[in-house]
Amino acid sequence: MAAALIDGAALARRLNDELKVKVEALAVSGVVPRLGVILVGDDPASHTYVRSKSRAARSVGIDSVEHRLDSSISEAELLALVDQLNHDPDTDGILIQLPLPRQIDVTKVLRAVHPAKDVDGFHPTNVGERVTGAGGIIPCTPMGAMFLIETVRSNIEGLDAVVIGMSNIVGKPMADLLLSAGCTVTVAHIKTVGLPAICKRADIVVVAVGKPRLVRAEWIKPGAIVIDVGINRIVTSDGEKRLVGDVAFEEAAVVAGAITPVPGGVGPMTIACLLLNTFQAALGRRGAELRAG
Ligand code: GUN
Image (cartoon, rainbow, N blue to C red; front, side, top):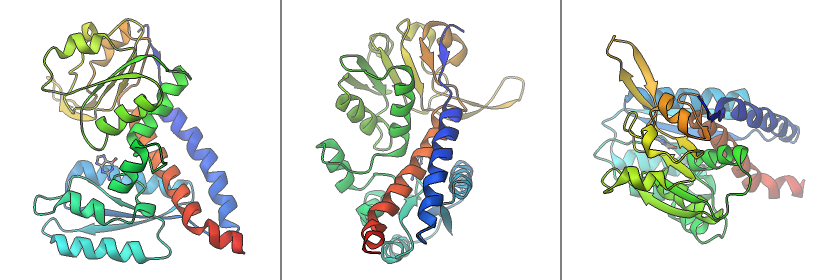
């Protein structure tokens, strides 16, 4: 492998260690940040993610309270829980694990979260503020991906970036963050015609489509920074269960300049950024109280 390995697990550990010190300092004033996590249904991947998020939160001293709801829950019941957490003075951040069951209007539920507690950065107020440069909470996965890119190259102004994927969670905010950092950004997706050639133009490629090993070595410009957001559970031809990304890692690593692995790349950084957002939300909400003494 010619590429440098971008070690997301190591960077996440460092950020978590630094955050733990800050959380401990805040605890002296009697404030323990609290994250309320809402998990609906029994999607195994969502359960795994939520378990990892809660464990990581507790490891840095952030309180994580899980609310597990049956997949048959009504939209009104879910909205009532969001309202309760919005008004709970001890809850600083609210995370609603996606996807949600079909009967629930995701847009409506995400819009119901108080923007100051929206640690995922999905509320239209936060999206609007971010896009217009007015602040706003930044979604965790794109924020983590930007941290990883920065470890390779601190100034990315003028570079060609291609984002493959157009979700509200990753693709769109990722493109916006790269644009704000001065890149020339192309947003492509699974239906884009001529995807390999478009990808090959990129100095920075971020892939978030959920297609195992979609991006091949010949799609990558030599020396490019490759950020793989995909987490796909596959069964190999010899029956082995594996996690793979959206990039064919072994062959892509021969061509790329730097590349994230799966697992151990973007995943741990998403969680580290969630904890950062939760801490910031706690400071933002309770800072005034603390200053008043
Ligand atoms: N499902 C997949 N990724 C995410 C995420 O970043 N936040 C939430 N809330 N749900 C997700």
